[in-house]
Length: 73
Image 1 (spheres, rainbow, N blue to C red):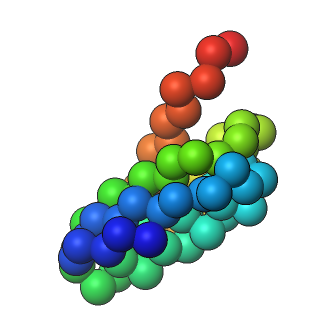
Image 2 (cartoon, helix red, strand yellow; image 1 turned 120 degrees about the horizontal axis):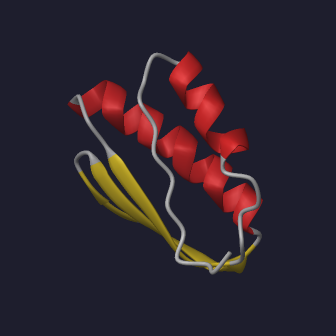
């Protein structure tokens, strides 16, 4: 992981996208609490499935959330 205040980039080492997306979401919430705003990127991972599974819990934690993927539909 490359941390920098409210920013972080996680190297997924070609791991499961769902596991990495959950880790990134939790990391973003913790960084947002500490710094007021956060952005966490994940690289070198597989497809992470349905984005709503990772977005909805973050909004319930009183934080906004946005997910992006370069994967084709």
